Amino acid sequence: MSKSALRRQMLALRPSLQSAHPSAAGDVARNFNAHVPLDPIQDCVAVYHAAGGEIDSDDLVALLRARNVPLALPVTHEKGPLSFRVYAEDTSLMPDAAGMLAPDVNAPACRPSVIILPLLAFDTTGARLGRGGGHYDRTLAGLRKKCHLRAIGLAFDEQMVEKCPVEPHDAPLDMVVTPIRAITCSEGKHL
Image 1 (spheres, rainbow, N blue to C red):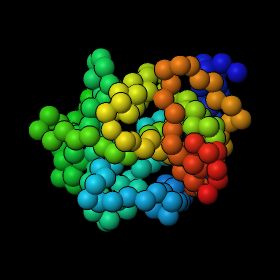
Image 2 (image 1 turned 135 degrees about the vertical axis):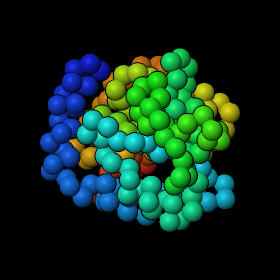
Image 3 (image 1 turned 90 degrees about the vertical axis):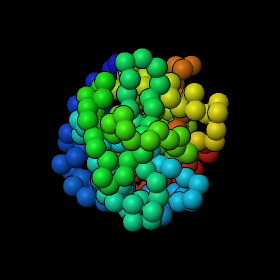
Image 4 (image 1 turned 60 degrees about the vertical axis):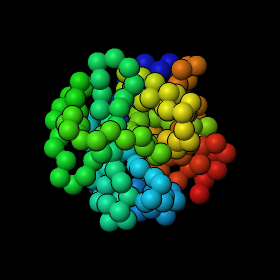
């Protein structure tokens, strides 16, 4: 199946997933907490604001804040990769170039060691289908050249497909956390 056909199919499916799984955000946060080791001294975790039926990350944000893990939000620019700014509880947010809420220019920049990202579809090899803008792919590719980085997708279990179509520029995930499991993609191992 082509990327565009799978994207249409998964976009059509996503609204029903939200209503079928009202506790998904809390379940994902608990699975993340159980399966993703973090060091609040060394790790900064980039999260996202959910849009268009993506799994809400608010429960995960609350859990990470309770563990004193530093957080960041992505900032989309007209061109190039995403940048990341510190996301404290009192951070002022404003729409970025993609219309997503992001920290304003006064928030300090940071380089996350873990990036949490939404997706439309994934497979156990770490292939991910996003919305098609390539922002996360460019960002992950660039950051992985500079530092160790873990890319972790949040998804509904129904978003897993047998084989996600990929192109050479697509950046793989290291893990996907769903309401019922955590999947280590490099090994395709279900935890």
